[in-house]
Length: 484
Image (cartoon, rainbow, N blue to C red; front, side, top):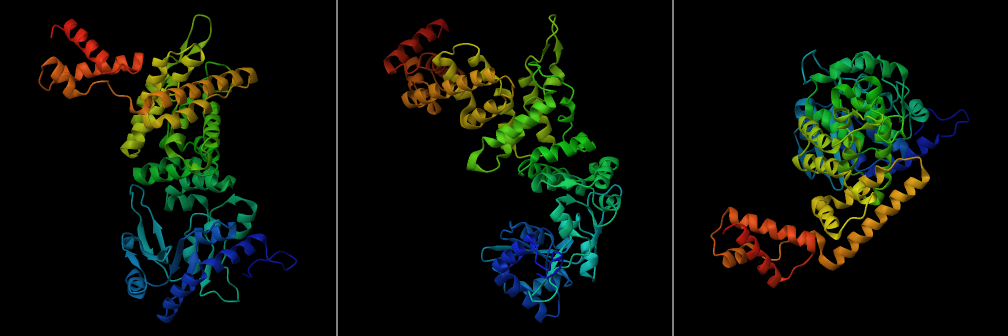
């Protein structure tokens, strides 16, 4: 790759990485490009694929651009590809699968959103440079013409390689025009800042701030997807701060800026907003090798959003937020529903928000085994995430207090492990089943059976395993009290 070496004539580190990455994907890239060449069309690797090649992170998803129209792309590739998708054909994109690689081939194009429209008007173009001009950011506005050859192999008309080296996000043209063409790019700026760890150029930040209301025309699903990608990126704090500072969060996630001025009850942090960002960082550090956990990260961001509605000044001058976890769980459910997250994600995040304070009762006093069982049962399959969220929620700067809380949670986890070994906590059930209850009480299926099973479950949680004989005895005592 010969474009823009350093002053000594030596290829830059990014260029050397790109060469290695492009050589890895060269067999499939050259193969498909020769098909286009044979049909009289140009093809180039483009956008995020070139950027990621420069960063040494190119995967198996490859983006291409061409002067061929979508119907021509289909004709050229249909018999070559293992599988073809036409979902994006209205926007000029054809998807292909070839071996381990997923390819998207898009016709040169321009697109523009009308003032009140959620869908762009797409116009096809004839020039690679003009196609690059419509890209969101300069680091995504580079292309490598194919097949690979020894000549000038990087098309970079807007300084993307320079901006990549400097770690900055700029738009190929005026930011206002770019965001007017596609308002979602404002959210993508925050997402790429989180993903790449880059700074955003001041003129881009100014345009995001000025035009934030334009984001409201975008479909909820596209906004949700960008937010999820931002949260699952390497540096989500960076992206969230940018959303809040530009006012975009007021459109996307208003609960986050809503907690900025709510001083937390421990008076150990600047405000709940800063505390929340710290909890997010600490939760991510606890993920380990399991990869980005969207549910855990959403719960970390939303765990204290109930505080503004529950804020109260106590007679002694302290600020309290009683039951903010209950209010916050309801608010989290509402916000994630509005963003159309999957139902299981919504339910899991709301449950974690609701339970995130439960541990403090343990730290402040001895729990019975019954309380530990209830903690495990209420958390259910979310127990591991609840462990991480609860530990992450300790952001005190008081080292002694931090150690005390950590030791207390270590103790709780040890007790859970002991009880789990003894009683299989995750599988706790009443000592009798429904059929046995009906036989013992001589009743038919109905509400009485459900109430009896609930009573036996409460006994099981309180006392541990009862055994069948004792459970039958307790069932008849309960039935007598119920006049059955």
